[in-house]
Image (cartoon, rainbow, N blue to C red; front, side, top):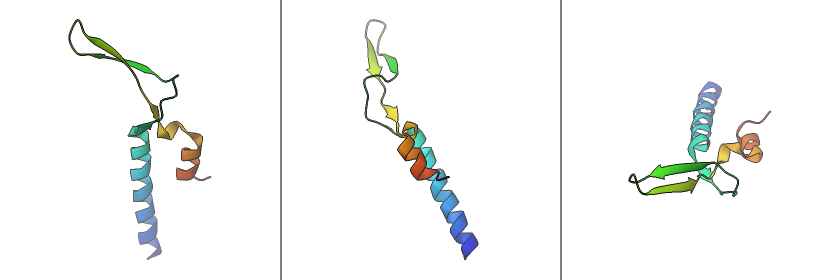
Length: 65
């Protein structure tokens, strides 16, 4: 029973970390700028939002020392 709980917790942590690595939120104004090319004449500069895994508080909540 304890082993099953540990395995479930590992799976949940894996899902949460993968989601946090992909999810972006809260553009700070200093983020990376990516260029989106629609046609050869139309190019858009898009400011990417910050990944939530980059926030220290989110890291601490997921990976407690």
